[in-house]
Image (cartoon, rainbow, N blue to C red; front, side, top):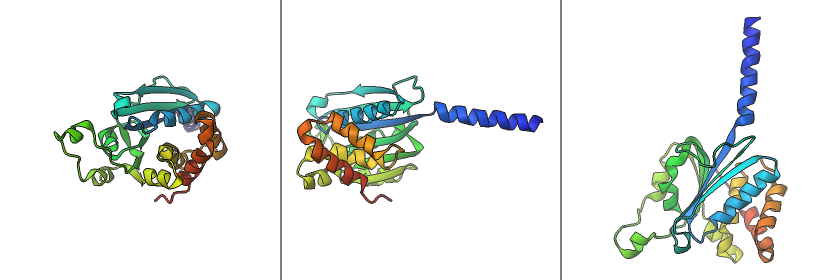
Length: 212
């Protein structure tokens, strides 16, 4: 009888933990890459699916090509908008040096989605620093899973560099248990009307990428 009660208690605890679990997604990149739009699409999608959502945007000179970071958390109940170091389930990095810069936020079992684009930060442009040559090797040496995507080239082949953000959202969608029709509806609801068609194409291109 005692063992049965303990088993029931453990099953109830498991159910409670699943119910209370949150998904933590960190979106990082450089100003002008569309990171904030991507975060809003994710947040609106999660809300439409009935999740509690909290977001925190850190612009940091975003209009000047500076680092931009957005925390997106969703679940049955979210208590804080900020993701703590080592607790992100997924990081979407729009630029590879930003991926390395923020990689310590990812959990050991998390997934890093990296657009392998290089954008020189101001110190590199001014000649006071060098852009590391081994960025992707360093990222891939970590314990977490890394998905490298040439999102800029995919977007360019579609005729619009700016849709690289929806390419990356398509890659993200493959990692999350959310219906594709809801993803596409969220994209349509958040992008300018004249770009809906190309953004949907970009999303599908990302979703259909071969990932290993």
